[in-house]
Length: 190
Image 1: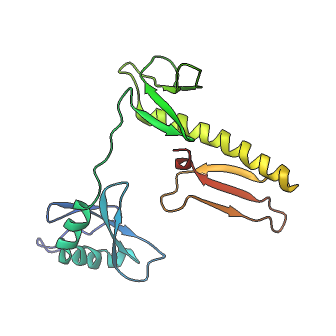
Image 2: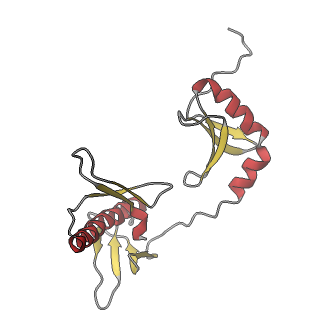
Image 3: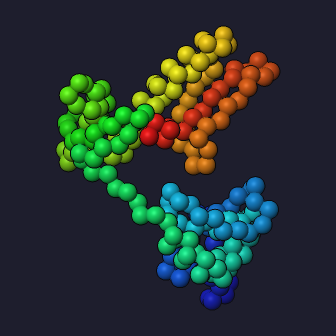
């Protein structure tokens, strides 16, 4: 083993390309080395079709420094939510509030909009508020699908919420004795 040989690159490893984060990723569906922007993680992915091609992906990313910098700079600023912010939940305002106990959704009244009361000693935990929104989305989607299936006189499929990055929803028809299913992104609630 040479003292000057670089350590092998690994799937998921984070590289520094001109001061910007680039994550190496192996994808069996990839046919060639490519770059893609992950807007959620706010990083660029250097995708390789196999672990042996990770070095090629890293080299390609290093050669595209200007593109990587331009893509990451063009991302919109992340909106951060704080207590007393309002989000739209199914078209209705919903206020985020700190509070003790289990996180929960309090329905709207005549005087106040709906509220998501957080948990934790420091107040509102936004990750938990997201889970409350997802739970409410799951409930509402199941109700709406049931109403439409009743109107169409068809059996109600299984309904689930997902955290898809690229699709708002998908459906699978019934076949070979399998039940039909519908998956919807919980972000539709917002």
